[in-house]
Length: 308
Image (cartoon, rainbow, N blue to C red; front, top):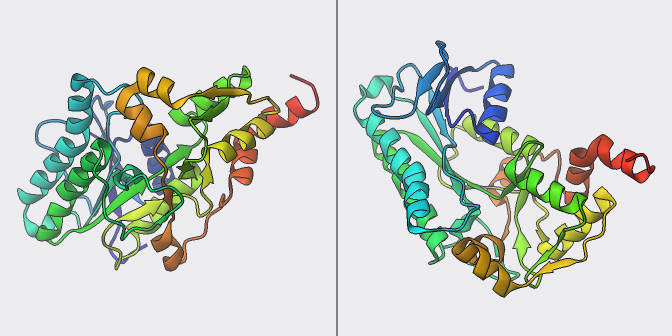
């Protein structure tokens, strides 16, 4: 822990990653203040909305944002944009209004690997230029809003996250249920790369980034061994002892999910956690087989013995 670095505000603390992060930081000795749109009563909870109260915080981690895993209508996209770019601007504006001596020193702000262009088999590190699609532009604007805080002397790290796999998480629970009933299968050609990360490593990497005083700029939060959609499909089917014969054609994904189908599920993103590796971060779940073994756990063991 950095000298004098004690209190952290977690914005989006009722979300999947936010809950896990707040619990982890508390267990590591940090004083954690949780932010939510509907906070329960308590001295360690504050509200998102209006003028954000960032007093007494050494650092802020903003993980809030409307899910992009839905069809992008005009109204949905407006909510996505406001919950990400709009909220980040509100955080920076709250910092601007504070006495410089009382401002948080660090802002770790959510972003996504969707900032990168779809690039086939090309490896993507943090220095890669952003893409031009709708999701890439959103992420670019999201990061730009956060980076405005650098002008206030705040250390800013945009967290470019891949698919986070963890029990209770949207991605894992949807996939697990589909595969369990035999409806798992590849998307499109299956050749597109899928950057993923286990929840345990996601949380540990954010805590690690908080304590790296010299770390500025974007950070890829994804496992060091990305896989293609076909590889992911086969590995998950094997872990759950289920077939994966289904195939959703590209045209069907476009018709059903529009922009999210094209940019969120069919785009190829072979992102690598180059900066994390250079800084010496150690992954607990570096490869997909180990990550799935932990996630499936007792369920997969019992299924392999024919008990389910």
